[in-house]
Length: 185
Image (cartoon, rainbow, N blue to C red):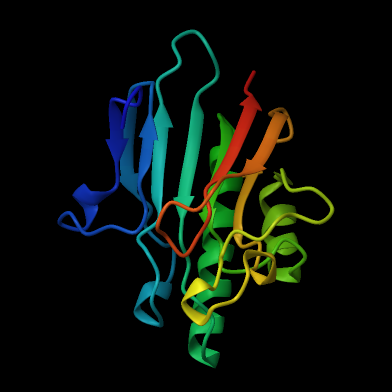
């Protein structure tokens, strides 16, 4: 990607990853390991990544890139919720020493109690507005974009400021890109 020489993601899945992070700053990536259980065994979903961004002389920045299971069955619903709780635990742990950004396809909308609970547990704040634009679109069913769902979300440490948030144009995916400009201390 032009201007983004550093990336992580495919190396954790043999090149076939649904989660990828690209950066203009050097990064170190690792796979997040669950504390007690593996929600990915209970349903589909992507391996969550923990990215550390090198910022010499400043508080570290940790980006958690996520894609929990889509809740199409009771087991997948449970797996999605477990995944989000594990991510919240990881974000809370990282926030002790770093600024934290959690970004990805959360497979739950902004107004979901599961999203709210994850934010509260991790002491993060949402970057979405009161009524965010849809990001998951259903063109495969012939539906217009405004009937989509806002499930691609960004949550940040309270010290990180939001400069701008927008939803980009279609680029061939069943999701629209979320563009977020942040003011990181």
